[in-house]
Picture (cartoon, rainbow, N blue to C red):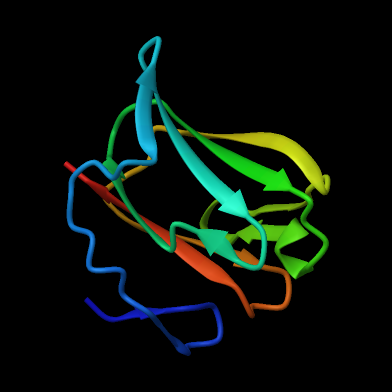
Length: 116
């Protein structure tokens, strides 16, 4: 699969095809996707289930780069994260497809692929 960041540059493919990805869990009927923000976003590719209540947890730990200024264009989300902590983003019940997560400058990116 070829992935691109917000500026159209190709991103490295991690090769991980487990579904759902290891950073996805179910907590009291809600799908929780953990993304670490520091020097970019990790993991860069996440596979998750479409059509169920979902929260993205953006985790920071000593983050002082542009990955603090996060954007999720498909849901018109933009926020400045704290250098340490967790920001939960309720994205409702996402449809099948790919959601991009980017820093405000478009230098760092990750994607979540929602599958049925």
